Amino acid sequence: KQEVTQIPAALSVPEGENLVLNCSFTDSAIYNLQWFRQDPGKGLTSLLLIQSSQREQTSGRLNASLDKSSGRSTLYIAASQPGDSATYLCAVRPVGYTGGGNKLTFGTGTQLKVEL
Amino acid sequence: GAVVSQHPSRVICKSGTSVKIECRSLDFQATTMFWYRQFPKQSLMLMATSNEGSKATYEQGVEKDKFLINHASLTLSTLTVTSAHPEDSSFYICSAVNSRQGNQPQHFGDGTRLSIL
Image (cartoon, rainbow over all chains, first blue to last red; front, side, top):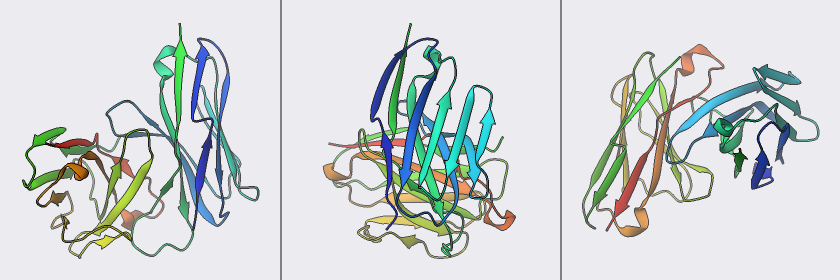
């Protein structure tokens, strides 16, 4: 059974810092990995999606890397801003799921607070 | 980008009431929709997967008679929590994807906060 873990569970940093969020998964047979942002009381916003054949994806100040063989992904946020404060979730899609669509297994999330 | 609308955003009702939550894809064909449940400070737990025109597939431990899912069209899926009790209070989130188009990401609704008194 796939298990997805995120460290740290919570993080507080001053504005302007570069930071790294970690995600690890136990089964390397994944189709892709996705990073999401969740604001309090809201749904999820997709940030980056990395295919299993890719090593990294970039969008603006965000960079996500994937090391499938070691079961790890990192989300790097450059020059953090107070507006980046949210919970960040990673999720993996398994290979071979036949239930229709793309079933995801989510991590427990990292709650980020960027202070002025 | 793709938009998924979830309604209502918040429900407060008495124990024993049945509550219906709607999930609509506004600008794409949602051949598959997922329903998740999220407890405070925890991650999303998949409850069920529904394919348009078919019966939903429920995850282990999820009561199908308690959580009724209907996915009768390519733009709408509903989750009905029947005879809700306080332990059903949670944050419910839907997502939608066009699974006919290969490797597409899921698009999520804004969630429904259900509080049973």
